[in-house]
Image (cartoon, rainbow, N blue to C red):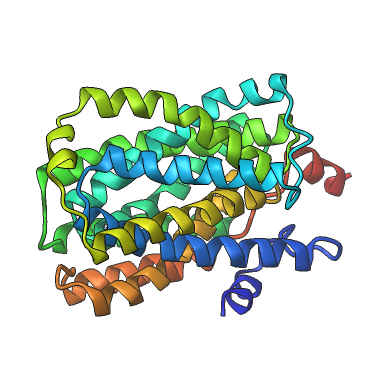
Length: 318
């Protein structure tokens, strides 16, 4: 399903002759993990509401599993030098900030609200892609797609039956963090060559330090000390750690293959799977008109075409 959908949206250099299958499988893997992660995180934060502690467990699990797998020879981390590791220190902070604000959004509002606002971010990313990462400006078709995302988002906000000041405050914070995150991480991925496993391991490992400080300073400690684990809590928190590991690796793998805007659009489109799963699992839904706006956003995203690099566009013109 993911593969067929990716071929339908036809990013120009996403399906070139040499990279077609490799990139398509990477995108399909990321789409599957991303759509599952949003639902799993919603379940995990519902049964265990300490957001910083939940993130700490997810990131620690990721770093530990990859490090152990590297030690026993299941995968290679030989490219991970000290110099390259510290190049990902800033990535870790961006990554952590995006994850934390994501969790807080899911804690204070419904999932459709998050998805639609995420649908509006490619407009910002495409501009930053052009300014900082050497991409061409979006084509007319892509501009229409991005404007469709914005229109759908606007309609949704007006029909949102679960408006929350706290929820929209965290959404505003997330948009700023996410926009910077997409451009900065893409820049580092381009400049510092590492395997996806190495990138994921070092990013999650560095993220543990500031997250540990946040845990100490937060008021979650009383909740965690008095929390009584049951089967649901163990199952969903454990599942979020497992899916989060694959999500982290697959995201770095895909980032290295496509532009920042394309990565953002792919991540947005795949959330339709989250909506379908969410519709049958929760009673906190948007209205029918809100769902319609959401679907309009996703359909608009399918019109987007990845802009070529400026030097590539220049050589084509010549």
